[in-house]
Image (cartoon, rainbow, N blue to C red; front, side, top):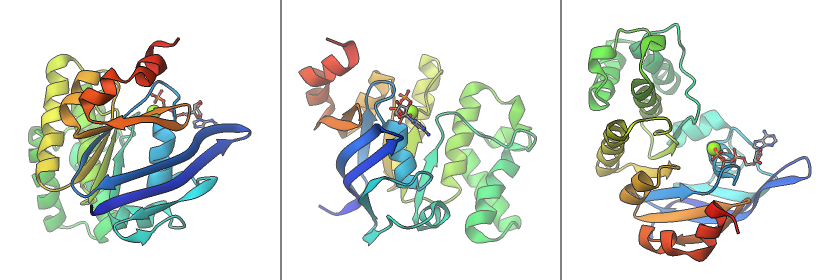
Length: 238
Ligand SMILES: Nc1ncnc2c1ncn2[C@@H]1O[C@H](COP(=O)(O)OP(=O)(O)OP(=O)(O)O)[C@@H](O)[C@H]1O
Ligand SMILES: [Mg+2]
C-alpha cells in the first residue's frame, strides 16, 4: 500500500463540541474514495482540516510522504491538495477564465498566454470551453459546479477533494459531473468524493467510509457499506 494521505487520531472541537473525534484514515495513491455520513457528521470539517483551513485540536496528517500537520493551507495547495467547496465561492464579477487564472497565478506566480492555454485545456475537459468568457454569475448550477472543479484543478492537484459537487443537480447533470470525476481519476488523481447522492457515490467509489458524529462507523466496498446496520441506523435514525 502506497498511501498518499494518512490521518492519525484527528480531532476537532468547537467550544465543547467534538465535530471530529479520533479519526484514522488512510487513502491509497490513485484511489477513488467516497466519504458519506448524515448532515453534521463532520465530513466538511475533516476536509477543512486536510486542506488546512481549520486547525485540528489533535492528531496528525501526512500527505505524499511528509507530515503536513503544521503547514498552512497555501503550502498544502502547492504540495498538491485541492478541494471544491460545498457552497461555490466564485469571483462572480469575473469571467470563467479569470476565475481560473487566479489560482493559476497563485501556484505558478504567472498569468501569461501559457497559463491561459492551460486554463482553456481544463475548461475544455470540464465541458466549459464555450463559457470561458462568460461572467461567472451568468452560469447555471451545473456549470458553476464544473467551474468549482476546474478551479480546484488549476492547482494541478495530486489529491482532489470534492465536497458535494453534485448537490442540487438533476439526474443527467449528476452523470455529467460523475463523468468528469471519473476522467480526472483515470488521469491519476486521487479523489475523495463527499456526496449525499448515494447512487453517484456508490457508482464512483472503490471504497466508502461513513462518518457519524465525528467518528468513522464503517468502511468497506460500496456494497458492504450500504448493507451495514450502523450506516442504516445513522441515516434513518433508530
Ligand atoms: N466553524 C464551526 N463552528 C462551530 N461548529 C461548527 C463549525 N463548523 C462545523 N461545525 C459543527 O460541526 C459539526 C460537523 O459539521 P460539518 O460541516 O463538518 O458536517 P458535514 O458532515 O459536512 O454536514 P453536511 O452533510 O450537512 O454538509 C456540525 O454540528 C456543525 O454544526
Ligand atoms: Mg458538509
